[in-house]
Length: 185
Image (cartoon, rainbow, N blue to C red; front, side, top):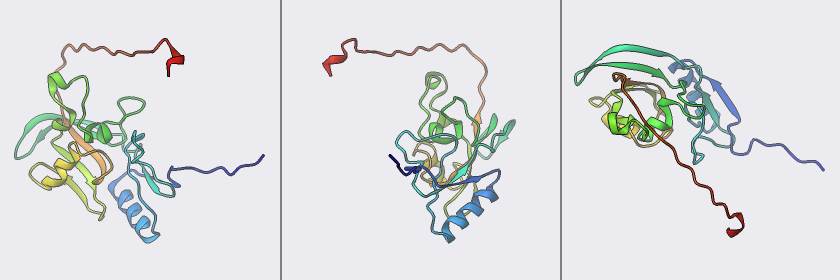
């Protein structure tokens, strides 16, 4: 028995990305060669929106810098952290990607709010190849789309700045249920 091995819905090409210029070069290449570009920051999209058969996918894991800073803008002066798109906070998820862009619902919501509301600034490359710093006061439509509109839809995210909070106690729990009667299905 023989069969053909295929990639299925996975990207056929990967672009090792370390900067905005790498992403811009990849966008130009995909446009010139008529290859779909798919965007994901670190791992996956549960619904498969970050994959595409025959596509070019930027490899964002090289953008793994973390820098603490005193952030200042027209609206805010607060301590923050700069997080590259390749930084993962679990084995499955990166902070700058779908978690935050999807709203960022998690265990700290009761104390700090959703993750998307903790972002004063996004660094992105748009589909037209523009490298932008997106703020609530500049490129506002894109800022709000990134802050809860789901990952991979509006621009390739290179980094995000997030507010820093003081340490404090956190408690949590997780439940899972299993049906003991496996023949009832």
